[in-house]
Each structure stands twice: as structure tokens, then as C-alpha cells.
Amino acid sequence: MSRKRILFYNLDSAGVNYYRTLTPAIQLERDHSDKFDVEINPSLDFSDPETINYLKGFDIIHYHRFLIPSVPQMLRLANELKSSGVVLVMDIDDYWMLDKTHPMYITFMEKKVYNDIIDNIKIADYVTTTTELFAAEIRKQTGKDNIFVLPNSVNPEWMKQFKDERYPDPNGLVRITYMAGSSHLNDVQQLKGVINRLNSDPNTKGKFKIIIAGWDTEGTTTDIVFNQEFGKELQNKGLWTPDMIKAINKSRGNIDMIPVPTSIKDKYRGKVFFINQRPIKSEESVYLSYEKILTDDYRIINDKEYLKWLRNYERGKYHNEGVFARRWTQKANVYAEVLNETDISIAPLADNMFNRMKSNLKQVECWTRRIPIVCTDIPPYNVDGINGRNCLLVPYTKNSMINKNIDADWAKALKKLIIDPEYRQQIGNQLYEDFKEKYNLKNVTNKRAEIYESISVKKEQLLDV
Image (cartoon, rainbow, N blue to C red; front, side):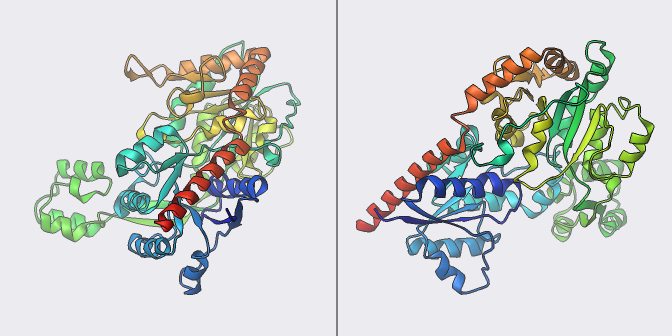
């Protein structure tokens, strides 16, 4: 069989591209170049008529979520490519319906992005995703069995940021690192009170250091502004009541949840609130909220000069950080180097459908360095994570009720690791042993190659009919 040409395409230039497109493509080229001619192209110009001819030159096109945002255009493009024998493999790593606590929820609902994602799933010939749980959900949605699971994975042999080059803290502190993006404020809420508990315990007070990685004050933020014309029309029609105001606030912009006549619904559909984007101010960064929770509102920091320095949002490292440190956002190929100054990693997640469909990337980031990790006891972390064996799991619920003492349970788990270096080593070593095969990119890529080969064989069989 001749080498099959595969195009890897992903508009995203950050973490999603790194784990779902770039590194898988590189590993495939390294290990299976005898079978596949791999090309990575992140910048297709669909306004150029030659682009379609370029795409027709591939046997398989791997893309993340969509090639073109417009579903009708995507459908036309897909039909033309499929008629030329091109196989479309869509990759998806996040559930299509955001939780209400997600900062992009209103935008997603207003634009009905979830419908576009589902339509794109149905358009693709095959779908790859991160977990068996998410794959099952996709199968439910499509009724098809064309879904393959290729977990997020790393290869420390050539992905330098995952080589174990850890060094001890100069002050002998146990470093606890929270490394996350900007959409996790609801998840971090379960850590409120944890640092106060640890700092009030004589066994842990002054013995640990908190590091928040990914700190960022760049980008834009969204201002949600109520449409005053909508309010005036309701007032003129005698509909502006306390119950109506409650319904509007609860609707989060979904006009169908607001008890108004159909004519008003049609007039203000998608216009209940206006969404304005503007550059973010430093003091508005969500990382500041993370910071307040993970420093007990700065009570663990006694150095007034350091507090003043932190309020200036200086990049770089302070000369005497003590018990807290910021680590600013880095590019996708180096961001995990902060784990070289980490003794314990933490991964809090609220229990909702969107989070349950996530991958266990936080655990995957830790296995190569044998770093113990504390996670919330929900999927994705309790799938391969076993409490007391290869991680510590903090219950989100107890007796089918939300765990009201979750902060105490987080503090208890962290205390175990802070005071016992041998226990840290034991948990970290077992994480390494349990994850080193399943979550090694080399092994995952072997499975990917098998999938692509089977796809190619099926295509040729259909062409021979």
C-alpha cells in the first residue's frame, strides 16, 4: 500500500492544537513515515479557489471541530471532498454544551454554537476524542459508531517540557501548583478555606508554597449590557415587574425563558443583552480571583513589599517569594516547565456535564515527573485515578449530596502529602507506573496509525465496489 497523505489542520494556536493536532502529527511522522506522508498546515485560505484542489490531494484530513465555521459551507466543502475520495476525521475534546458557570456560556447560547458543533460531528466520516465517556455521549448524539478514543498524551523523549528536571525549593517548602486556564473560577470555589485550614494547622503552617501558573492579564473581557430598549418596551406594555426582572436575570439572555408575547420574543431574539468585548484590565484578571482563594485573601503573605510588588502585576520572579508565587502564561510547548518547581499538583473540578466530558490532562501532565496530584473525585480524574494509589481524590458529593465539607477534605488530602515526603514519592511513582503506557504519545500514536490504516483500507474497498 502506498503512503497515504494526511493533512493535520487546526485553527487554534494554543493548548488544543498542541495536544490534539501538532504533537500527534509530529509523532506520526517520526514513527510511521513509511506509511503516511504527514503535513501540518494551520493557515488554509478558503477564499482562494486553489485551496479546494490542494485539499483534494490528501487521503485523510484531520481537523479540530471544523474546517470552516459556517455549517452550510462546511457541508458543501465536505461533500466535494468526499466525492473526490478524501476522508474527513474530526477531532473534538470538549463537550458541545457549556455549563452555565462557563464564562462563554451566554455567547454560546446566543449563537447556538452547540448546534454547529453537533452538525459538524455528523458531517465528518470519523470522529476522534479524548475519553470513552465522551465517545459514548457522541455516539448517543449521532447514533453512529464511527468514534475513536485517542487520549491526550505526552512523550518525554522529545517533548522537552515533560522531561523530569525538578529541583528542590531553596527554602525547603513543599510547592503546591495550580496550573489552569481562565475558565475555571467555578471549579476553584471548592478550595475556599483550604489555605486557611492549612495555615492554621501547626503541622503544615509555613511548610508549603502556593504557585499559580498560567497567570495572564492580556486578551479581552466581555461586558454584558442590558438592552434598554427592551426594558422600555416592557415598561410601556406594563410588563416591567419584579417577577419579570427575575425572569430576565435568570434567562441569561435566552428570550424563550422570558414570559413575553411572541411578537416581543421575535423582535428581541438575541438582543436581550449586548455583548461588548474590550481589553482586560490587570485587576480584572480571573487569576486574581484564583489568587485570593489560594492565598486566603493574601493572609499567608507577610511581606508588605512583596504585596506591593504583586499589585503592580510585574512579570518575572520576585527575589524573595516565600510562600506564594505567580508564574505567567507561557507558550504551549513550554508551559509545563513550571512542574520542575512543583511537589504537589492540584486539579479541582466542579461536577457538571461539561467537566465530566473533559480529559484527565492534569494527571497526564504529572506522570513523567512522578508528581503526586490531588483531584476532585469525578470523571475524568477517577477513571484511571485511584484514590490513595496513584493520586488523592477529594469527594465532590457525599451520600448523594454536595459535599459541604469539601474544603476540609481538600486540606486533609494536602496535609497528608505536605507532611510526608515518602507518601508523596509513593503516590507519584505509582502514577508513573499506571500512566506510562496508556498516556505515552508514542503508544497512542501507534493506535492512531492503526485507525488511519483501517480507514484507508475501508475507503479502497468502497472504491473497488
